[in-house]
Length: 346
Image (cartoon, rainbow, N blue to C red; front, side, top):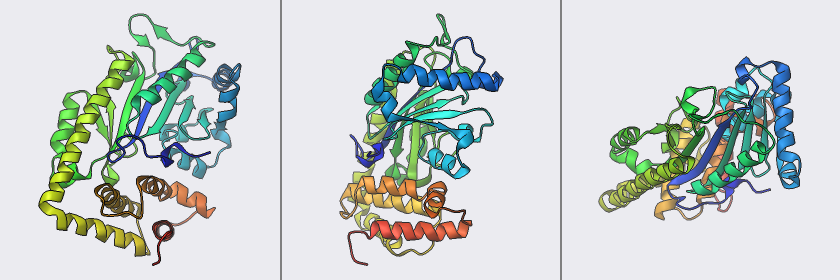
């Protein structure tokens, strides 16, 4: 089945992906870190039962991954795909995840909360993934009592998730804001509006490849729909600024900009050793070149696939064995050369 990131969605020149995540806990059970192994097993079993009974389509499309049976490399691949958190991968609890074959749905079980219901889509599609998350949440809530308080809303392990328990985020590619130095003021403005800005893999990670993740900080005191619309509105303003600055760069520094893009394109076509940091930086330039019409041999989904497949876990999975960092850099270069040159002679 085709993965969700293979298709370019709306506003894909700037928006790489949309994500909505709901935190939920079972009433009558301690939070995962306070629960017993037996209770953790029951959470997994009851979640599967709630989703699969009377739902043959969900049963067919969702696969259960139990992490005590999965290799470290396979866990790392799922983290790199943003399907599970690093905390879940590193947990010593009885953890699991239900993941759809197109990887648009991921329900983490026994992470910080009993359930983290997550849906992903390419481009600006927050309303679509919100509706899908709501459907899954409603399906589970029909059969399971969820921990809820009439005054404050959904009860969660971390106080910052209490209330709606929703986390709405956009992954944005913002090279022009970075090149012009306007990224600082924009991020500062987002912070004042209650929007957190993080790197490629969320909290405490770097914005490699000019990738920035915008998400709501507040989950209490607003409705889920209000939070979705707020992130969509703020995201749209950032998108507009990025597009304006791209046009400005083209107008004022067209030759210099094109040279930078085509240098990165040439390096990626012929490189023999490539670190992940350099690869993400060069792919950012190439993505921009595609959007501005300088490069026609590739498209955005080619870049999405490469960004994923150059990550360490995916390289190790493909090699079928452990590799030293320097060997990974060689493998990464081999993969990129092959991918970029697939439809052209070297």
